[in-house]
Image 1 (cartoon, one colour):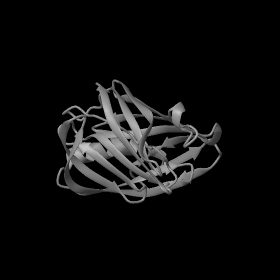
Image 2 (image 1 turned 180 degrees about the vertical axis):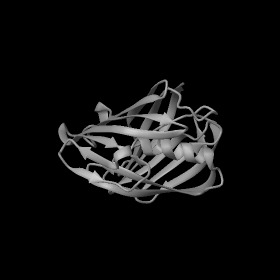
Image 3 (image 1 turned 30 degrees about the vertical axis):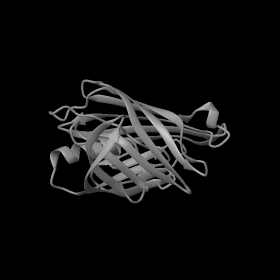
Image 4 (image 1 turned 90 degrees about the horizontal axis):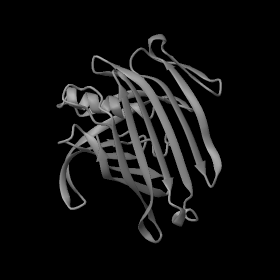
Length: 229
């Protein structure tokens, strides 16, 4: 799971906790020997029809920086919402580095039967309870933070190509951050297993406005620049 790069689900809920469609645009920065540089962009699209959702992400480096870090990743997660709970049933990912495919797989999830099966043929039996993928885990996190505002730790069963792992997200408190000259009050959430830090907007039902991810020796940051909901 630690090898997951840019598995960032960006989400927003209405006050009734129903999923709401949106498109978010983010700028991607990396700490390099030349300093902190803007190297690419990411687009996140949450489509909702009644209680069914499809979430897709696209992240890639811009042509100017491909010699430094040539990366692209696309993801797709589908499922539905029942009584405010996210039920995930499918996840896919294609990841390339310098045009070489590093990851290309699909996972079908049968939560009611407690198993998940990969396109590679692997099958995993899971413990009773919610099973999500590296994208829909953030939908579950947002939902729980809205429903349980006094809780500071949330743990989920998350499945990817390497199997099922329990991931813990810890709320560390409030933090004011500045984006495009605007001060935003956020909740700072950390997942140690993924070396991931999320700044979730307290005013916008915990929509992520800043994400920090450590991948090996490189640190990446994504900053929200445009939101259409």
